[in-house]
Amino acid sequence: GPALASGGKIRSLGLAGSVFDDTAMLMIPFGLAIYIWSPLWSRRWYLVGTLIILVGLIGTQTRFAILVCVILSAIVMLVSLWRARAVKKVSRIEHTSAEAVDRRVSVMVLAVAIVALLFAILVPSMIERAYERFDAAASAKPGGTMLLRMTLWKAALRVFADHPLTGIGPGLFRTVDQYYGSLMFGPTHIYVRGLSAHNLLLHYLAESGLVGALALLMFFGNQFRLARRLWRSTTSAERLPLNCGLVVVSFGILVTIFSEGSWMWGGTGFLATFFIAAIATEYRKFFSLPSPTV
Image 1 (cartoon, helix red, strand yellow):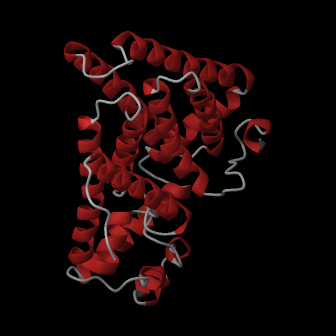
Image 2 (cartoon, helix red, strand yellow; image 1 turned 90 degrees about the vertical axis):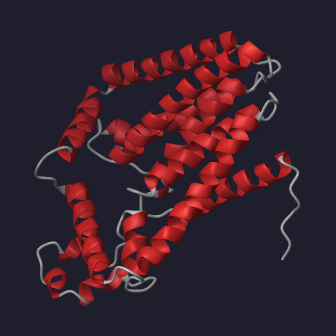
Image 3 (cartoon, helix red, strand yellow; image 1 turned 90 degrees about the horizontal axis):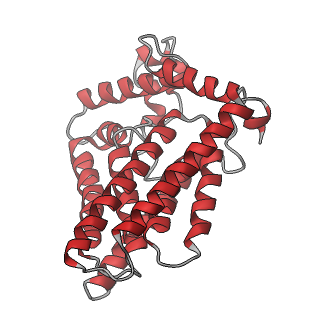
């Protein structure tokens, strides 16, 4: 793609635009979970597909998505290793051994190392560019997208401080510059006008205050509670791959509401809704709960 051809000078998000990095951020650990736990030969295709998505994610050079992806993938491997050893002692899961999980995790680590080595050999400038972007994010004088985020976060906190209970109203943060002269005529006006807060929790605090933010936390916290209980209760080898993937994605969605801005709208809103609906459906089927009625 353009990112590889330019040696990292061009950030390429593909046809999906900004939705791609958020999707890849969740789909990579989900694919790894399927590969680790699936008893089927076809699990190898999930590993191949996951590596292809990883290359695409690196091409976007989106720092936050790459960092979250690395953390979630590490959680998948560590939790899987722990779970495999725990169930081995009580022999609750058929066709899944601790040795098999160890071997698959080793294959995953080796595959990622090979991809990193190929990048270092073929396009070393991309690795350097990625390092520079992470270094800039940690700088005491942020610029670019980091300045954008910090400006929006400060604006959201200011609005929340003025309207702590119910906020300024749904959908009004995008026009918040019209109500605050310092934002309208300030040097960072271009970073505030027409945008969300790029932080779901801060966005809800600004638009709906403590009332809306509390509801948001309860909603996302509950979907993780369901996914976690489902994962801990699963003993069937056929359901483990899906439920492992769902719990790590659920955790990823929960923790990123503190720094991600669009799980409740836009293309990423559809993605979050899909996974949350899958968790609720699987939970209802697993515990034999009645279907909801309208």
